[in-house]
Length: 283
Image (cartoon, rainbow, N blue to C red; front, side):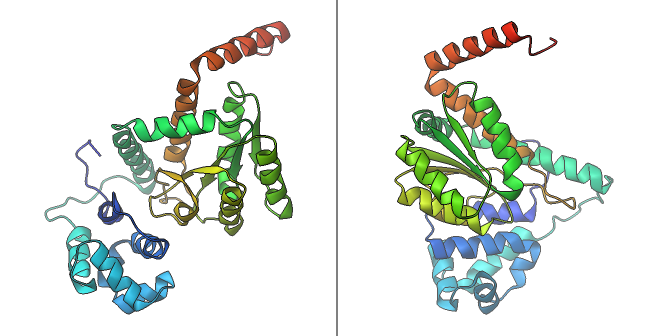
């Protein structure tokens, strides 16, 4: 983040795991620590193990994987990270202003991620080469999947939105693979529908490369994805704000367009000609 504001404790904890290769069990522990907020610095190893659903030795190994002698050393570090800054002034903003400013901070952090464009560019090439391109989004992520697919359909020949769970979901993934799909874009947001994670496993079983937009590098969806693109979700209001994930989805679509510029231009021109002929728009 580059606006000089105070980094929230949860984000300072999350920074501990950036660039560290974590096993699926360690991802569960890391996700648990991030979700606990400032209280994480006062949890025992046994409490962390219970919350994450892992063994206590796993928590110790996790601490050592982060470069600490054991969990007590990691907890001391967590207390330093989550301590309130001294001399801080009361926040004059009301809760609505705070929610919006938190989204601005989420976008700032997302912008910082794009200092290195290689990761999103590579994901764009993978998705651009998939015909058809299935786009998965269940429950809270369904509107975002539909939004992405609406625009993606203007530059890709066959975009298939998978926004319903149930037994037919696996059928549709397998049908996409049989029709020539090589990749799947998944949008998996809190509270992480179990069906969405099951679908990611099915997609990989079908031989698809899974690119996932989710809220955190340690999201449970990361265990079942080949490429994880994180964008924080705002949690200050009754229901989550998805400003950063939506922005990331459209940046990824830009990367898809950049990966196939000739096809993109041809299809956009064809759409504009059709729209003009049918007088679709007033302006």
